[in-house]
Image: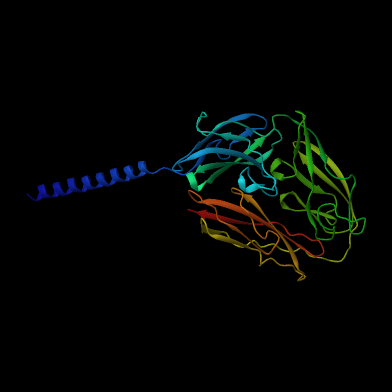
Length: 352
């Protein structure tokens, strides 16, 4: 009798576990993910100028009427407005493709890889969702891919004067701010490829390395950035795919010592959709205690309207999302003598 009761308990426990497992499967089957790019896959290597099939999973986002695809280079300093009604008067990014419901696959189709693409590129897919008389809203997904040209690199050139003179005219400026000690800048480097296309290859992610013959004049920093650290002459050597190019640089700036400022974009945060988000650069500082000029820009996520982008504190309204999405912002600060900071980054995750 005792053995029979134990056997019944075992059967009951197994039945409960089976029912619980079935319930979990039922719930999971009833759930669907949010809007997501399926193809091309994250970290895929694509060939510049070729085409791929773009495919999305609409998930639980119903009422989608169109999906617009946009390419952004990893070398882009900031996003431009996407092609929507909020972009009036702004620089608008042309859609690389527009996917509709009747396409195969739905809301996808053939997608051209930018002919001048090279290095890391971000594919942004923005889905337009109809809300009837309430208008429309949008959701997005993005993937980072690696784009490589099929053609060989022939020569490297510089989109600058040759030789490059920094500060020779006293208060001249070659790259946005007055040339001075501590100034940080990016050298515009262009590669001419065998397919006849010129591609930007300034970023190390495109395979470019830098070397300065006089590091006490021009210092090479991380990320392919260059810094004026003294007066004199130097030769910058740029190498990519076995090719080299040399640029003579003559620096003649005010030699008053000036340590570059330090940008601090704050800590990453998670916020709710619809909330006002504040980006704070108040912890940025200048070693000499000078006043700072601020520049905020957006690097990832569907483009948002960034208010007070040239103040210590910028803000934006967290958009509607179907699942957590990450928005990345960059802060650069400059002191009154023209010295720039290295960039600082902050991520904002928006939750439904």
